[in-house]
Length: 96
Image (cartoon, rainbow, N blue to C red; front, side):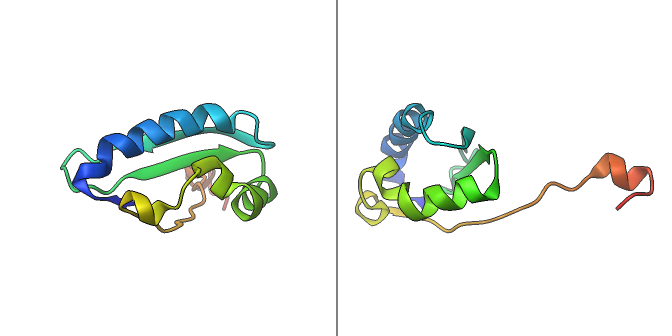
């Protein structure tokens, strides 16, 4: 997500609060907020869930409750990026 310079501290405080509130969400395992070291204003959020279903349920029904206010009002532009973990030991052993 991209954050206007004036909103960086506020975003970090919101995520600190949100992280505590998220502990009650079914399937949520944790999150990290990655701050840019080059001052570019582009943060990344990494979250862990028990399953894809748990994440998509939260995304559909609990996201606004967790954040409390619209991201647009906070000078935040965000997009959802999805990744899967590459099985490096499996690749080294010849498995795919």
